[in-house]
Length: 176
Image (cartoon, rainbow, N blue to C red; front, side, top):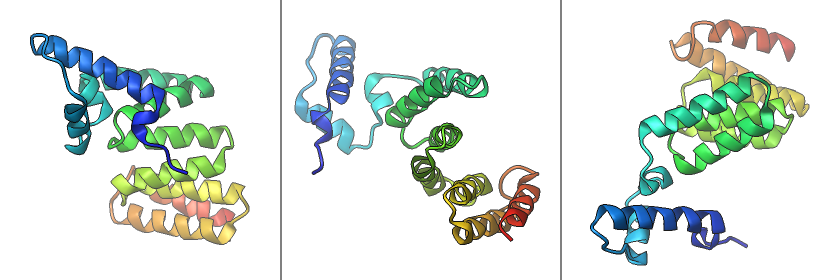
């Protein structure tokens, strides 16, 4: 049974804060529910509705990344989950959330996060490599091989970091 996003208390609170910010910025004119739904319909992200800037999101991303590299996986997961809700069209947020969940051995959630990342950056070998690693952990070696091969093909076509092809080749050796 699906739930209307506007029934979620966190979303409601965020929208109310956005309404208040809008009202203050517009000389006290209230923001109607119709305008709120219009903002969503116009594809404004929650971050935009809340008035968060790119810099605000980058600060939060940097903090999450620092938590991730420090091994504070729960804090990092919370931050990247918030970032994914605030700005769902930013691929790196989904990638980092997937990395955190992979570190926590939450394989299926990580795979979902990496699929969202790849939906926005389909030729990036990093997403395919991470999904392949999760598939290995789940015992799905043929599926992992397919992902590693796709990562290798994308890397050989110049996508991703310079060492992506070498990473994919090493990963393929683990499932041969």
